[in-house]
Amino acid sequence: MFRSIGATFAGLVVAALIVGLVESLSSSIYPAPPGLDMHDKVAMEAYMRSLPLGALIMVLVAWFDGTMAGAFLASLLTGGRERWPALVVAGSMLAGALFTMMEIPHPPWMAMVGISLFFPAAEAGRWLHRRYVLRGKPAA
Image (cartoon, rainbow, N blue to C red; front, side, top):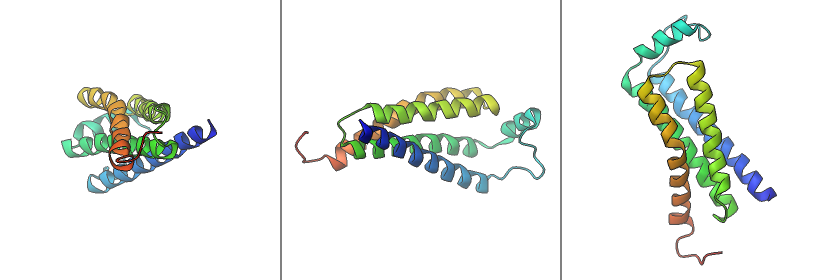
Protein backbone atom coordinates (compact mmCIF):
# COMPACT_ATOMS: atom_id res chain seq x y z
CA MET A 1 0.00 0.00 0.00
CA PHE A 2 2.76 2.47 0.93
CA ARG A 3 4.62 1.59 -2.25
CA SER A 4 1.52 2.44 -4.29
CA ILE A 5 1.03 5.74 -2.46
CA GLY A 6 4.67 6.64 -3.06
CA ALA A 7 4.36 5.64 -6.72
CA THR A 8 1.29 7.84 -7.06
CA PHE A 9 3.06 10.80 -5.48
CA ALA A 10 6.13 10.30 -7.71
CA GLY A 11 3.86 10.09 -10.76
CA LEU A 12 2.14 13.34 -9.78
CA VAL A 13 5.48 15.12 -9.34
CA VAL A 14 6.74 13.95 -12.72
CA ALA A 15 3.45 14.84 -14.41
CA ALA A 16 3.50 18.35 -12.95
CA LEU A 17 7.15 18.86 -13.90
CA ILE A 18 6.56 17.82 -17.50
CA VAL A 19 3.46 20.00 -17.79
CA GLY A 20 5.44 22.92 -16.38
CA LEU A 21 8.35 22.35 -18.76
CA VAL A 22 6.21 22.08 -21.89
CA GLU A 23 4.08 25.08 -20.89
CA SER A 24 7.29 27.06 -20.21
CA LEU A 25 8.48 26.17 -23.69
CA SER A 26 5.14 27.32 -25.07
CA SER A 27 5.42 30.61 -23.16
CA SER A 28 8.87 31.21 -24.59
CA ILE A 29 7.63 30.57 -28.14
CA TYR A 30 4.40 32.53 -27.62
CA PRO A 31 5.24 35.15 -24.97
CA ALA A 32 2.53 37.13 -23.20
CA PRO A 33 2.35 40.81 -24.08
CA PRO A 34 4.35 43.07 -21.77
CA GLY A 35 2.33 44.38 -18.85
CA LEU A 36 -0.35 41.67 -18.98
CA ASP A 37 -2.05 41.47 -15.58
CA MET A 38 -2.62 37.75 -14.98
CA HIS A 39 -5.21 38.60 -12.30
CA ASP A 40 -7.36 40.71 -14.63
CA LYS A 41 -9.98 38.30 -15.96
CA VAL A 42 -10.96 40.55 -18.89
CA ALA A 43 -7.33 40.97 -19.97
CA MET A 44 -6.73 37.23 -19.67
CA GLU A 45 -9.82 36.51 -21.76
CA ALA A 46 -8.56 38.83 -24.50
CA TYR A 47 -5.10 37.28 -24.28
CA MET A 48 -6.48 33.75 -24.59
CA ARG A 49 -8.52 34.78 -27.67
CA SER A 50 -5.36 36.23 -29.24
CA LEU A 51 -3.24 33.10 -28.82
CA PRO A 52 -2.44 31.17 -31.99
CA LEU A 53 -3.64 27.60 -32.34
CA GLY A 54 -0.11 26.29 -31.79
CA ALA A 55 0.04 27.74 -28.29
CA LEU A 56 -3.25 26.08 -27.31
CA ILE A 57 -2.21 22.76 -28.79
CA MET A 58 1.05 22.90 -26.85
CA VAL A 59 -0.94 23.14 -23.62
CA LEU A 60 -2.96 20.06 -24.60
CA VAL A 61 0.27 18.24 -25.47
CA ALA A 62 1.68 19.24 -22.08
CA TRP A 63 -1.37 17.87 -20.29
CA PHE A 64 -1.31 14.61 -22.25
CA ASP A 65 2.44 14.02 -22.05
CA GLY A 66 2.66 14.93 -18.38
CA THR A 67 -0.20 12.62 -17.45
CA MET A 68 1.17 9.81 -19.59
CA ALA A 69 4.65 10.09 -18.07
CA GLY A 70 3.25 10.28 -14.55
CA ALA A 71 1.07 7.22 -15.11
CA PHE A 72 4.02 5.39 -16.67
CA LEU A 73 6.17 6.10 -13.62
CA ALA A 74 3.40 5.11 -11.22
CA SER A 75 2.98 1.83 -13.15
CA LEU A 76 6.72 1.27 -13.21
CA LEU A 77 7.07 1.77 -9.46
CA THR A 78 4.16 -0.54 -8.66
CA GLY A 79 5.31 -3.15 -11.13
CA GLY A 80 2.10 -2.64 -13.09
CA ARG A 81 0.15 -4.65 -10.53
CA GLU A 82 -2.28 -1.86 -9.68
CA ARG A 83 -4.22 0.47 -11.91
CA TRP A 84 -5.33 3.04 -9.33
CA PRO A 85 -2.04 4.97 -9.00
CA ALA A 86 -2.16 5.85 -12.71
CA LEU A 87 -5.83 6.78 -12.43
CA VAL A 88 -5.15 9.01 -9.43
CA VAL A 89 -2.46 10.78 -11.46
CA ALA A 90 -4.99 11.30 -14.27
CA GLY A 91 -7.73 12.48 -11.92
CA SER A 92 -5.41 14.89 -10.14
CA MET A 93 -4.14 16.34 -13.39
CA LEU A 94 -7.74 16.69 -14.61
CA ALA A 95 -8.64 18.53 -11.40
CA GLY A 96 -5.71 20.89 -11.93
CA ALA A 97 -6.75 21.54 -15.53
CA LEU A 98 -10.34 22.19 -14.49
CA PHE A 99 -9.15 24.68 -11.88
CA THR A 100 -6.98 26.39 -14.51
CA MET A 101 -9.88 26.53 -16.96
CA MET A 102 -12.10 28.11 -14.32
CA GLU A 103 -9.48 30.74 -13.49
CA ILE A 104 -8.37 31.46 -17.05
CA PRO A 105 -11.06 31.23 -19.74
CA HIS A 106 -10.15 28.71 -22.44
CA PRO A 107 -11.86 28.19 -25.80
CA PRO A 108 -14.74 25.71 -25.49
CA TRP A 109 -13.16 23.27 -27.96
CA MET A 110 -9.96 23.24 -25.89
CA ALA A 111 -11.88 22.57 -22.68
CA MET A 112 -13.70 19.63 -24.27
CA VAL A 113 -10.54 18.11 -25.71
CA GLY A 114 -8.60 18.80 -22.53
CA ILE A 115 -11.15 17.18 -20.25
CA SER A 116 -11.29 14.09 -22.44
CA LEU A 117 -7.54 13.39 -22.68
CA PHE A 118 -6.38 12.71 -19.10
CA PHE A 119 -7.65 9.15 -18.64
CA PRO A 120 -6.60 8.01 -22.14
CA ALA A 121 -3.17 9.52 -21.38
CA ALA A 122 -2.98 7.47 -18.18
CA GLU A 123 -3.92 4.34 -20.10
CA ALA A 124 -1.24 5.17 -22.67
CA GLY A 125 1.32 5.40 -19.86
CA ARG A 126 0.20 2.04 -18.48
CA TRP A 127 0.32 0.56 -21.99
CA LEU A 128 3.88 1.82 -22.49
CA HIS A 129 4.87 0.19 -19.21
CA ARG A 130 3.32 -3.13 -20.22
CA ARG A 131 4.71 -2.95 -23.74
CA TYR A 132 8.30 -1.94 -23.07
CA VAL A 133 9.04 -2.83 -19.46
CA LEU A 134 7.02 -5.97 -18.88
CA ARG A 135 7.62 -7.36 -22.38
CA GLY A 136 8.83 -10.91 -22.07
CA LYS A 137 8.57 -10.98 -18.27
CA PRO A 138 6.20 -13.44 -16.63
CA ALA A 139 3.08 -11.94 -15.10
CA ALA A 140 3.37 -11.32 -11.37
